[in-house]
Length: 244
Image 1 (cartoon, one colour):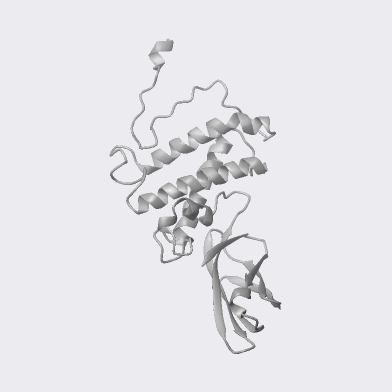
Image 2: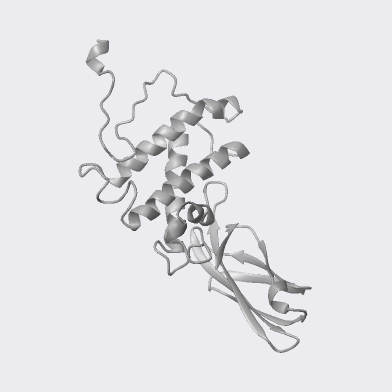
């Protein structure tokens, strides 16, 4: 089972390819099954493919879509995908992108589902929550939302996927969010916050240079990261008293 995504108001088009299973036969019937909350907007059989339009769904919810075919020679087969409904303008990363970074936690096909650790629905929540932190920090740095620059969104995808992959590692007791690697006085939120702050600080000049709308600027502020990637306190090179 792999993952597809669509916007809240979007009607998505999805397709299964059956050529490898048909072995020279043809698709006679195709029966689609959708989770409650999303709507079948029309289906079709097109040669060796079955197509469906799907609408509806609630933000940051995960739904299942399956198609079962019967061939002209009487054989049956079924395929599935997981549909993540998201606000595409404000959410970065993808479950498949996270799975590519931590394949040992995905299923045998290389995807998250509701039997993996973390579950697909949990990974979707990780991505939405991390994206929210990125957007709050962008807004606080004076950038207009949603961020529409394609290159910027690709960079945000990489960052959010990486942080979500670290969450997946933490759920499984490894990585920078595992109990053994995290400083006992620093909670996970603080570590993520510092990561987001450093990311936005590093990318802010490039975003402005590429034309991102910014009404405020962090120029004139001295940036300092309080914790490293493992949650350990960082000793500053200078202290406030040295400038007085």
